[in-house]
Image (tube, rainbow, N blue to C red; front, side):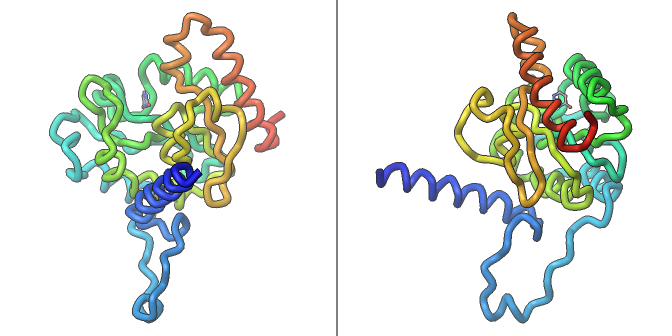
Length: 231
Ligand code: URA
């Protein structure tokens, strides 16, 4: 029992530390000491999505800056009600500087259309804005270095719903230690914004029983559409 509690506390500490590093005031209420209380409230680090993008394009905070071709800040409607968050750019995204433009992106674009949105109506980005070599899973330090950008994008957009695509994106919001099969299909709350975890389009493409995985993604997206009044 003590082991479980320790794990939970460690997990929470971890999560708060990550969110704290984002500088996102909406994400973490800092414990305010007397000195803190007298200090001015820090202003958000970024004023607009374009401002975030400018910083991302020049970012050299982690080693991925050395291996990337282009950083990929994200794209979409500046007042999008729906935000899709993936893991990190792959080869095609790295070359073009745009998110989800490869095979997985084509599937995501189809999913968005099936939800009766146009790609340009929603916002699409990743947890990590530069391609990890060989498309490996981003390292923890890379996620931490990049976290302020996604936090700022969410804070500026304040979407009505977020879809987290796959484990890396879902872990950004919810450090649960659970797998996608357990997490998908139910909204959870991220500082007042409903987040729907679902399978990553690349995972869908890799599955032999592609129809059943696709069906589950579609069930998840129908819940998002219902929330947004799209059904
Ligand atoms: N996979 C991702 O997670 N993001 C992209 O932009 C492309 C593929």
